[in-house]
Image (cartoon, rainbow, N blue to C red; front, side, top):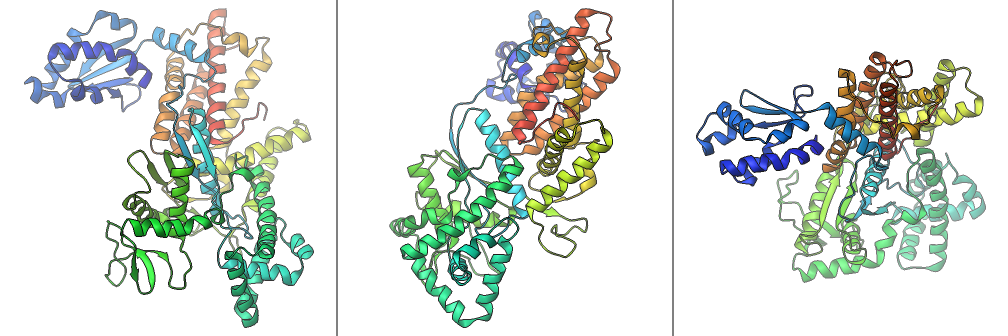
Length: 580
């Protein structure tokens, strides 16, 4: 509980000054307790024994004796087995809850502004978005939302694949079909078909393949007619991507598109910078860089990163380095976040290393690969349809909405049709996103319909239902939620204590979430909050309380819980209905 640490810190600072222990030695020892229920904050004294020449038990006892008595209004202090345990008092928690409730940000401070680029989603033009794009899109979007809320300037960059050799093939196929027919083909559900037809012709027809190669040359040389056709492919694909983004309720818009083509003019600059740094060398006809960290290939030889191939074509690494130049020098970015799958770990380590070697970045920049695992099917393999095909993301989302609607109809048959459709979308989309976000991002997870749509356990429907349940409490009373926010918090029962502690901890858990860009930590917190509310509501009378002050206090706890759940889910990109 960081807010409690901040409050008691001056008292401990005074004690350790008397003991002659430097702040940098003891400060990090004062930390949130690892075991909930025993204490809110703990300070282990074992590492201080060598300095103070006393046992941990004696040190902990001495510290308590030296602490100012004023601390008793904030917390109860005790020692056990060489640990100092600090437990917040109910009165202190009540005052903090009132402060948080009165704050539209629920106690979450804004940070010093940094300019941050978040690279995420990144589908390929003329290809369907599939389930593999889900993780990058929802993890990246959640990180963006939290960074924005924390007060940073965030540049969203959707690094779509819109350049390179395949586009010669796609443009020639477009010409063969005719622009009008191709536009019809490039609708939702038809992108994969268009691409596969072009690929099939490329593989089976030497004439088509040669035309495609010639078209690539025209594209890269800036031929106006070829660029016009290329723009048709891009615009039709973006129309489809935007429909998927709208379904997913993510923040990406057309202005966030920063495809590979955006950096085409910077590619010669990359070559120039690498030459100036004396790190670009020739290897087997290609221009390469050997990173400082040695990478060994299957033959046991040191592996370079190819910048420009022997045929003069640029590799992906060149585009990524051009991207870094643009972000560092034109956009003045401080932090570069790449929300890309774990299989690209080596690629990014090499790119980051080369960027530093070439002086493209300095100590003021942070480059982070926010990696993630795969979505697996019940068989533990990459999630695919029964036919063995990659599952289209739009189909997955539609099925989730359909399943959610059937569940809601069964649970609440009185809910009107239009309202049920609206709630079903919130539940269905939320279930898919939360199942992904609640998994530690570096790990794979198994896609399970029953689990993700369940109203029990750590799921989006469970949290959404908890929010709707609280809203129903106020709808049954004659008391406005705004009125309850002026109420004093009287914490009496153990269930109220636990709920209060978790409400106060919201800011700390959000900080932990962003420390390693791990949305699952926010998910776990929200689940623990909803669970403690369920226990509170089951054991503490709210509307039927005989004491009016206690009733208002408990309504205030309900309101703050709902607001915390709603804000937390909003930061994950998930909507919370008020009725289910």
